[in-house]
Amino acid sequence: MPTIHVTDRDGSQSSFEARPGLTLMEALRGAGYDSIEAICGGNCSCATCHVLIDPDWADTLPPRANDEDDLVADTDAYDETRSRLSCQIAVTDALDGLRLTVAPED
Image (tube, rainbow, N blue to C red; front, side, top):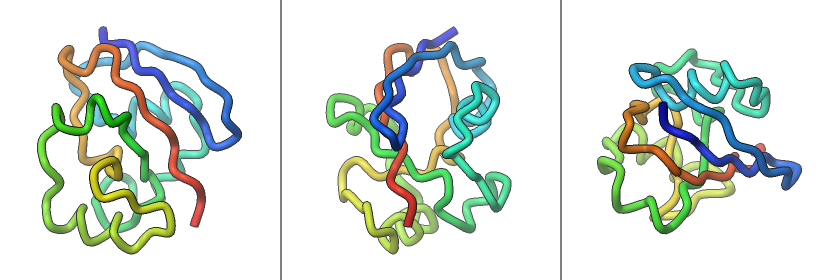
C-alpha cells in the first residue's frame, strides 16, 4: 500500500498507508483527517477536500479536469500547479511517497 505524507492545517505532519482503489479523499477521511470535510461526498461539486500537492509530485498526477479546475480556482488558497481536489485523485501504488498539505479553510 502506498504511504501518503500529510501536513495538516495546523502544521502537524504525519503519514498513513492508503488502500489502492479508493480516492485520496476517501483514504484521508478513513485515516482520520477530519479537516477534509468532503461535503459533496466526492462528486466534484465543492472544494472542501482541497489539498496542495508537493511540487515534486504535481507533474506526476493526471491533469485537473475542467470541473475540478473551476472549483479550486475559486478558493482562497488556489495554487495553479499544486491545487487539487482529493476526491479526483485515485489511490494507486504509484502514489507511494506522495506529499500533500491540506489547504486552508476558505
